[in-house]
Length: 433
Length: 91
Image 1 (cartoon, rainbow over the protein chains, first blue to last red):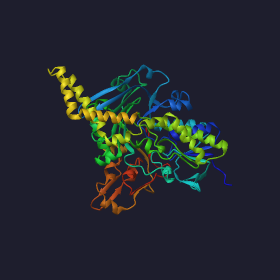
Image 2: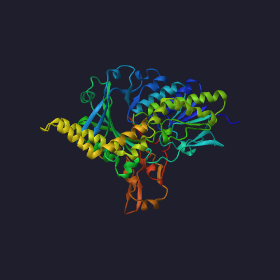
Image 3: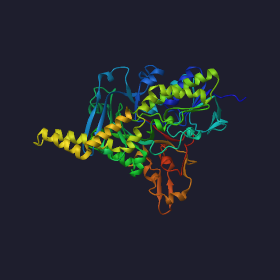
Image 4: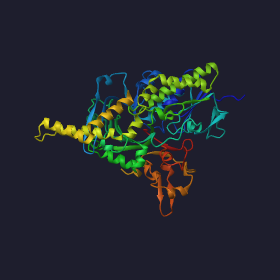
């Protein structure tokens, strides 16, 4: 009988793969994580906000030693039009107390640190290696083919943590071709500024306190798009994510869009005098619950972005990835006890995800991608109405407030239509109840 | 800022020997309407040369996002060989 090289092979050293590797290695299981970059994190990109709780379960108080930038004390939402901005959000001293809720991070630094912890737990991390294909015995996955000479490796189970483009999931037929509707193209710049300037501009009292701004509204007319600005210690992460279909349809050049965004009168003062240090792009799985592939097969499980586990409304991805990695690892540990790695046994991975907040949350928003596809105007028309109404109420021009309210109500009737508002409220309520 | 200047800021380990990007049927590029790859790529990898009637692919600027392969099924896309390609400092 052929001997396994490892009990488990994980493809991809992002948060999902590393979390799975950590849990397995801690149990004394022999595990290899194969990473195509020169080090874990070197090819990884996200907006930059990392929620603590999922990783804290694995490495308590990790943030005390991990390379984090700032803990987030204020989260803002901006509605943006061409010349105006309406701001809302939450700032709380509770966010300023340990253990923090979330942090701004750089993935190239953070993932490298996490990988070191996983390696210290005795997982083997194999860098600079691309997995070309799965090795099958009938319909059972028994290993991977890598681009190294004599690079075939055998195992009980392969965990695919190979990101949004997951070729492995596709090669098994677990997912269909990704459509432009299921992913957003996200762009980001790191803009360097002195920490004191950032503290002043964002109204925080120390260089460890951070602010996030999520931006939507009529500025992104006809696009399902989100902009963001996050504070790091000595820089800002600024970017955009746009559903790829809308970018194709409107023939948008992503960099032109980003440059225009940076010149908006509400954005420009934030980055003024800053120097761009890095530019990056990445696809974000936006399709939600219905775009998920089948999550397991014989000898195979799918985690993280490869499983399309992203809650785009709440900007959660890395934490869902870690959660899914943990569940996949635990499922392997159970399967090992009975010596059965068939999909019947591994299906409990899906069950664990269903019972956790991961799929509960994705289910809550399961109809959202379709709703926004049909009613894109929900994120442009209503915010526009709010911005215009606020402008009107604060603009003193000798028109009485009661007259202004009448004007605003008339505009609501004319531009939105009372019946349409009712219909939209009903459809949103129906989708989220 | 021009995209060319931004690409300067990115670290790459360029595979001088082989491109990881290609087009399976160059004839289709001639017929293609709008050529989405030429405007959607965030690294400006693709451009169309009207005189030569062919797509030119500047593969060493690729940031490996995969957008091109989603907008066009004729683009052949794989990961660069292990250790090659984009290398972010921040990410």
